Length: 88
View 1 (cartoon, one colour):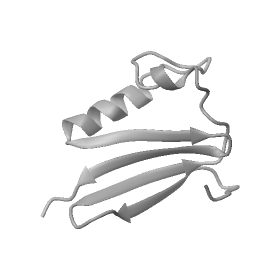
View 2 (cartoon, rainbow, N blue to C red):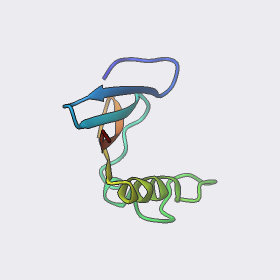
View 3 (cartoon, rainbow, N blue to C red):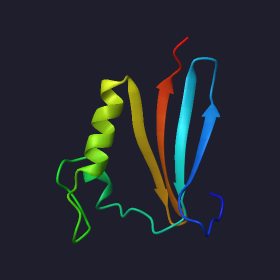
């Protein structure tokens, strides 16, 4: 994880001729192990003013477009990535 003071940093990688990965890297607090299994559930939030729909809707949009939304979290940050097939 690179260190950033400017907030989340997006990156785009070509994994192969047919696969792209869009990753957003955040060096903020890690997602707790307790919260990780429920991250994509509708209405699940750890925020007092959150709706719990953001990650749920994001994942649903990805699935409807044959893409995959995943995350990795550790003590030094979290990466959310969307893998999608490139249309030719």
